[in-house]
Length: 398
Image: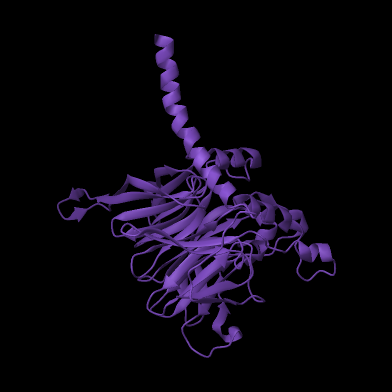
């Protein structure tokens, strides 16, 4: 009887896990190249800056200025700490941040795009991933997967001079695999770690963590004015990727290996330290459920109507194949095989979600490769999509 109870207990644990992996892998199989069905719910789209920027992972909008900030890294071909590409012996170029004026009519591509001048930082070992902008203070947060170690860089951003001056570097034991950032104001942020075992530590164990769906990723809170006192892990999420506040009290976190979005309620506790002084808030997260997505989501954003936008990878194995072959990429090489290595053949995907309408796919196909972020300016009726290993940006109109 005792043995049977143990077996039943083990089955109760194992069966939900196996079913979850079955559903995730079934979605992967359904989106393999021979089975993928195109979705196109845009009015039209076009590509910008094909010959100027590539490997752009994240983009955010500053709608009141009609500007987009984009993080791009040509060096990702040979240095990708998330996907596990470490070919520094072939030479790794630094990445960059760009400002795109998408709202001023009549601008040429050359005049519409400006590369930010970065000050007080080693630009040759700058490999930006997730970015976040705090409007009130003009602070730009950037995940930097430098070869010397992954950190979060904090810049003072000046749009007039297109200059970003590093003010602070956040390096911490809890920022071992930072990916995406959500600012809360006054130097307080949430950020995700995508893995518990980064590929730089063990490529094999990192892949096992990815495909097993174990909750190795994390959501971390820190007040950057008091990092040593405040940094702490608030939640565990399998392959925690994009992060965004859906509203003032709900945090959304994309899980790439789980193929879904987790939701958490956000609360802040204040304590009276003395008669006239209240302590800074202590943030807490409480699980509020999860929605499954038909593909592996990457980054997420929230538009002006409160809709959650997401971009992702319909067939993750194709994304991994592109990443593995990129170490030999040289678009200017005389050798055809080196130019061929720059090809990007993994499908892209964009969707939106609200609690009332559920998930609606906006795009699925091969026009944009390895799509990683989608954002939308509702007032102007346009949006942008980045491609982790693609060239330029996709601009869509609805």
